[in-house]
Length: 269
Image (cartoon, rainbow, N blue to C red; front, side, top):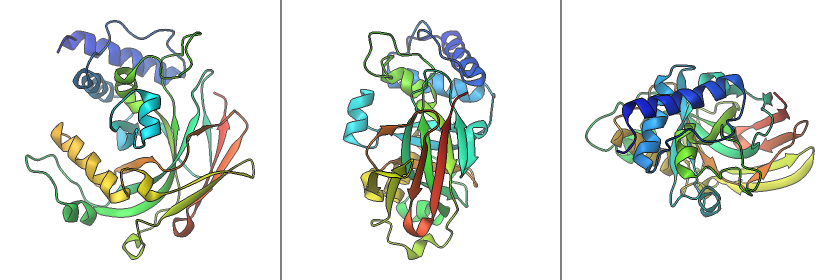
């Protein structure tokens, strides 16, 4: 690893301060992570910084389009901090220059812990630990400002995206469905409107083949890093619709059928 422990800690502290203060960094901290291992080391240090407790995880880049946009060749994971989780209906404050991508997703609430261990968890063990399914909106944002000549808000590169809490800006959660085992998890759908006009739609299988498959990916990824899932943790399993952005003052609503509906108003900071 080319980054020293001090450099990892400094990068994490810079990201944490920008997040807490609702501001953008004009340029990435220097030196930068150059591998995914280093990116996750900065992410771990961001978690350890302790500004807000981790209450769950998000999976990013679950579709080919998202992977192309973010410059990665597979999914990644990031922490969800308590301070930026809200129940629907919610108004989410975003700083000037925020990315403001909204991702309709299917989330799970863990009823039982899946502690870190040496052996992988089976699909049955993972499903047995799930307490509820929830509709969710993830608001994507990054702490590093887009350069004036850049076309992508993720111009700092994929390693900074992962290091920066996996680009999680906020998470909005809907009602919990505890009798989810009666549902066909391969046929769960969502329809989305923005300011009352139809915007996009999707199905649960668009995120890594389905909600429980995506959860299993997250569990294995975390286990390999020596991280377990605690009872009560939320895992949001990735965007299942087309990717879109909101402007301040716009409202997005989504109907998740048997899981209920959620609403988000995009606000300034």
